Image (cartoon, rainbow over all chains, first blue to last red; front, side):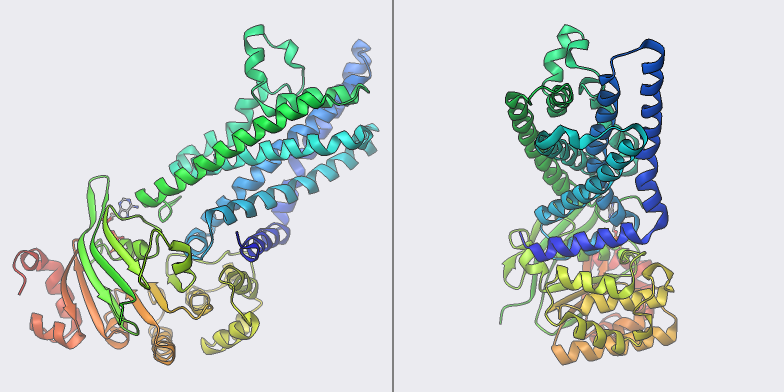
Length: 263
Length: 249
Ligand SMILES: Nc1ncnc2c1ncn2[C@@H]1O[C@H](COP(=O)(O)OP(=O)(O)O)[C@@H](O)[C@H]1O
Ligand SMILES: [Mg+2]
């Protein structure tokens, strides 16, 4: 792995993002729309049902955490798509860039994107709903890291699908996170799911993270076992995603897809 | 001396269509080879295989004496590529794009290098332009700057002058020729433009339906097919090429 290559790719995507006003607006628009909607929903719930006040923190925390996964994934696959859209993909792959360097760069882009959005959302939630994500303290760091890693896996899988099936797979590719969401215990605990689905839910790293988040927001200490589970599962999925990307890259080179993508 | 490129029995099939049927050739250092042939002859596929963008169905490619598939990244560091069908990221400035490519190719003294290339192609004034706003002629020249940025030993071009007007095309040919001779770059280029090939290339590989049906200096090719110009050769092969594949002269 050559850091100079990774750095060059990261600089490129960073300029690409910050240069274009629509991209900057788009980056913040959807997360903030989510924040408005969920914020007002929780306020309404509190008023109508006299629900437990922790509900507000649960839902807003869940919303921000989910966005971390989603944006990290998007950051990874968008780097690839930007190259496809600007007919630059060939320039990248005829350069002496290793697949691992390309992946590392898109991870870095995903991470940068997430840090920016998550900080903005945290600020917004604090100002509008007095919800302070940082009240979670140090537990935030490992939870955040696990969410980002899961986002990376999803992003890489999405990219692999796009590389192999092009435009035909685009809708499916963007849907991957939402296929996982119902069993990832984002807005409700795993115990809400039917008994047979619960073991499945616990194969998803995010389930452990979201359960952990609720523990911490309730004021309990973070369950280390959950954290370990999330981390181990994440490593497995990350390895699988890397393998599938590498495999699809090979298939794409065999079928001549790199040169034909989206044309 | 070991050839820069050595291709043996190269073949590429895409789900039933044979793009490259059976191609073998070797290119020595400093040679300028033109891949000529009608649409669909397999020129682009061949170039893409030389760049490792497409994996051959069978056959072998070695570049700088190393197997392409095994040493892809090391080989690519000493090559470069430009095509009328690719472009650099459109919302970056020309200069930014060149500096980023310099990073990917680990070019030393990148700024100085980029300046002199921009000067050479007479596009120094476009340095701070957004790449997407360039005319196709300007963008082709920027692509060529990118392609020369790492002082490639092997330069692969796919229809380099496809979008240029005759005046600019002529300039670009002259520059390519000059750079090629100064640095004795090995050049493999495809083109529809007979002028490109006649002026720049010392050797022509004539491709038809994925096979090489003629290989030699432009004069030799004219003699072989008893034609006045390469354009006539091209037309006669495009229309009657099947015969020649069966009965090579
Ligand atoms: N990625 C691909 N998938 C399927 N068929 C392809 C692909 N690339 C090229 N072909 C086919 O291979 C043949 C040769 O194409 P190409 O190498 O582009 O020819 P040329 O550059 O000489 O015009 C054509 O019939 C083309 O349709
Ligand atoms: Mg072609």
